[in-house]
Every structure is written in C-alpha cells, then in structure tokens.
Image (cartoon, rainbow, N blue to C red; front, side, top):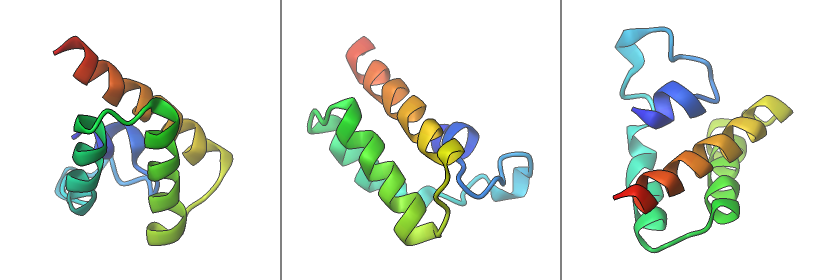
Amino acid sequence: MLLHRDWDPIGTSGAPETTGEYDSYVGQVYQLVTDGADVCTLAAHLARIADKDIGFSNSDVRDRCQCVAERLRCLLDDS
C-alpha cells in the first residue's frame, strides 16, 4: 500500500481499482529492506524501477523515492 499511496510514479493512487499496480515490486523492495539496505540504496532502487521498468523519471518521482525509502527504513527500525 505504501508504494501505491506514496511512491506512485504513474499517478494512479486516486483510483481504488489500481491498488495492486505496484505489487510486482513489493518482493524486491521487501528483500532490500529486510537485508538492511540503507535509505540511499532503497531510493536508488525505487528510482531505477520508476525510470527503467515504468518509464517515469522526473524530480517529483525522485523526491518521492527518497521519502518512501525513508519511511520504509523507519518501518523496519520501529519494529
């Protein structure tokens, strides 16, 4: 849900029928988080997905990659 709500490089978060849009990336991101990847690595991974896999790369997407990476790290650090 975090990827859909906060990362959302293609801007579908306002449409409830698209909640599974980024599910195929969850496993990769989860693995990085549980392996202890730092914020920079997580943000770079999300940016790479947005750019290479999805085809969206702009400053807004890169900023969201950073914010989501920070939230992902916090989720794990708080648990």
